[in-house]
Amino acid sequence: LRIADVYRQGAEYTKARENLDLSLDIYTKKKDLTGRFDVISAIGTLHHYRYNDSLANKYYNQALEIAIELKDKDGIASSYSNLGNVLRFSHGDSAVTFFNKAIALYTELGSISGLSSCYNNMAIIYANKSDYNKSEVYFLKSYDAKKKLNLIIGQALTLNNLAFLTYNNA
Image (cartoon, rainbow, N blue to C red; front, side, top):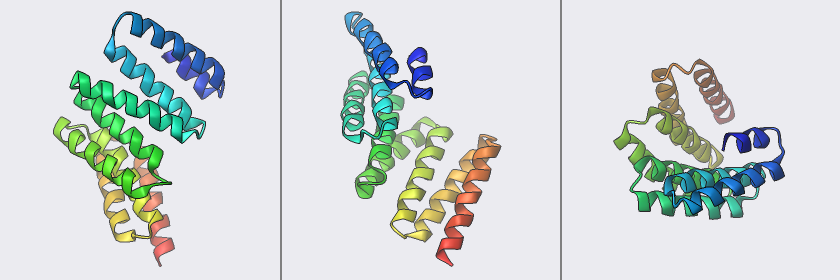
């Protein structure tokens, strides 16, 4: 998975996919569902980076099915979040549904990082819908989470988003 991620970051998508396919074959032969979940999620991410959201959606749904089978709440939450990301700009209402499911699980798990990401994405969705009040609420939640995690750059980016939101709403 790490080699595939290096290829993905270098925009060598064919090599990334080849490595992911090899990994998937190995995990499938070993009947390792956790490994399959990780690889299938990574394939979804690879397609998302290539703006092929229909394939990203397909693989993220497959990963979700595996996470549910494993009863892996963190995997389920990350799958919901991934599905929300795929739908964030094209189907905002569906994305909100997925992010709300992820938020519920991340809250239960105490995952501040997961919550921060979901809150930020929800803020973007509401800003795109011109619902600036809800957007502000979610940006502030994201900021608070980033503050708890001591993510200085994340805090600065969120404050920048809030300033941009305020400017556009004035």
